[in-house]
Length: 508
Ligand SMILES: *[C@@H]1O[C@H](CO)[C@@H](O)[C@H](O)[C@H]1NC(C)=O
Ligand SMILES: *[C@@H]1O[C@H](CO)[C@@H](O)[C@H](O)[C@H]1NC(C)=O
Image: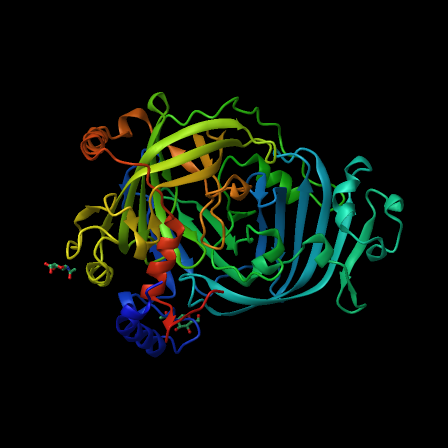
């Protein structure tokens, strides 16, 4: 990538970062003049209005975060693989922790396979310079044990476990009995074979939602799990997984919370059956429920509209430089067509889709990036010299925008799931992007896990005016099929704003 041309700008930013980042808990955010231990944020309301703090929910995040207490999954979680699990983590004032992970054969977390009991110590280190708003930690595992829940289910973990690790023949493993996989003192280490790691503990954030009429919801975010199985045991997270909620301060109703809270490794939680929606109906508009973080310093909110009768879609990706999504950097608007495939054979409950991007527009909302784009090679990113803050540019004619990693034409292999939340609002889960910033442009790269769910807007919230405009533009330009790599954009911008050091990008 043509990093050299930005080096002056980036060096200046970098120096500013170094100067301001001298204190452990002060987040180095000089480029945008943001510095605080405590951040507030907005929340997307179900009616799809961006409501301000005063009349909506106020979200705060303390740095360093307070982890003490018990934190539980609010639903059946899906990790790359796929793996289906629920988690219950307890942190003690002594810095000791006990993490329970329950794994299942099915996507509804109704048939437990095995549970892991992980004990160790966690210390907070410093505010993360890579993922703003996060805190870096250091953990040491003391013991990890496994309990298998049924003879029938045994083949799954056992297939990956050398028999010596449990000191028994595989056939001899007794359901309900605790076997030690790891013991720091005894030198027993059988975790690698299981693909197990607690690298997720390396990055934490706690958010507190203050409801307008009193009441709290506290959420604990741990680092993301790499989408590539072979990298998960050493990947240092820069994004988050879906949060756990505090067992004392969680959303209501949350049937899963109570079940997960009361469970143990001997009695894993069995979540209530949720009838599957036969085929997902994407119709209408869906928006992010919160400011979302992606690996490598990207904060964004998404806003998609699907029109199944036309097999067409349109998406806005609003990018921000801060974990509260209050400082916009740029917006991508993409549109195109999609085809719905079969239910996924690999990820029960998911459905396969193929997306085509036929048009992309970019609106830069911050000066430094606009200036950089203004200087790109002619024909590589929209109109040369045409970049102004706040002015949308269609980059379809230049087949995307090289420096932003947008390359058209483009196809993506997707995994979608729709589900009702406990308030009977439809939720849409879209596949998780590959952690390495690439795009799922081949069937083999199709996701096996999901991003944070988006919530459905009522019909009255579905904008209609700009759809017509877009269709006109499309017709007028005779648009080809265009491709695109949104996650890469974020890498670029984060690189621009935060993390450039004499030509070396620190990929962590
Ligand atoms: C951030 O928190 C630390 C530790 O709690 C405190 O010492 C420091 O003064 C705080 N800084 C700001 C800017 O609030
Ligand atoms: C981009 O270049 C044009 C033409 O030279 C100029 O008018 C515009 O202000 C530039 N934009 C930025 C953000 O510097």
